[in-house]
Length: 203
Image: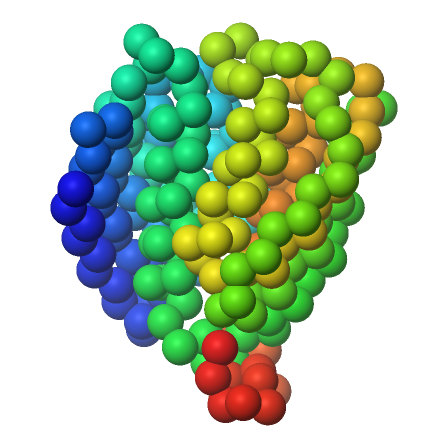
């Protein structure tokens, strides 16, 4: 396995690649973007969710993944979350001036999802809820939960998520949009702050 990362702290942009026996992934992320996305994971619904994540978080995102989809979707979704988490951490740098905390709820028809996030540098993930159908196309619904876990572990987030509804497509999409909106809020630069938002002096 080889991992390469390159970040520009000024523009809050990162490019991360990762290759294993299961996946080959390249991700670029610009935190202060326009919501533009170019995504190809081989899983149509997952591509749709990553595009929604970029659009509603105003992140510019490219994802190219060649994964072992002949087995299932697990390695592809998990590893994309790992690389995206690494890219988010790289792009944030020392986190100087960020808002740090955010709390968002997003509805989609009968479904609603909520995400509370702390860009703390101390990874933690908690999830409450379940998905109404086992799969959405070629995407296993519970992989949305695992995506959140893997992202939190690698981006250094304390991430609490919840979802409820009757339709798994709506539930998962609301969850990705709530994640996007909360991360957009939490990673914004507060013009009143010049230091890192922690009494310890670092995150």
